[in-house]
Image (tube, rainbow, N blue to C red; front, top):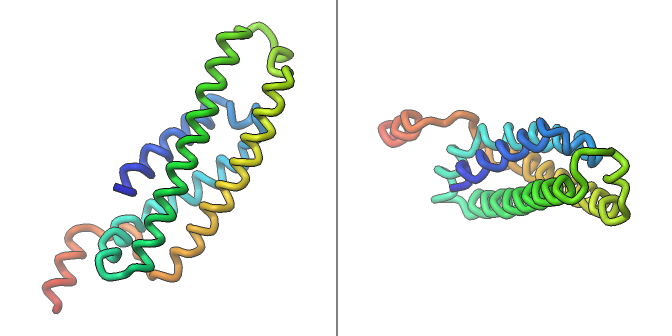
Length: 149
């Protein structure tokens, strides 16, 4: 489940960056850091999902990852909704239309939340090293472990 959710979040994050909303809202650095951390975490997810059966610590780590992924997905959804609303309300006529106090406050809040979630994913990424998770574990490797026993 975590792998599917993370895939969707990574795709939404890339779309957010490609739409240049991240640059406009001043969170492009957080977006790049997030993308890097999420890609590294995604590489070890299969191994983590396999190990969670026998390790409560890995299960807890996966829960932290899932919770953070939902938070990030909510942030990206809010950005998309706000951007659509701003474009509908003001049209594409002027950059000055984005200087409305509500938009400035929204940008500030999104910047803070993106910084917080970036740190949260960084901590999750660092914590994964405690579990000796292997990138790219496939079903064949899992079966090999059973055959060796």
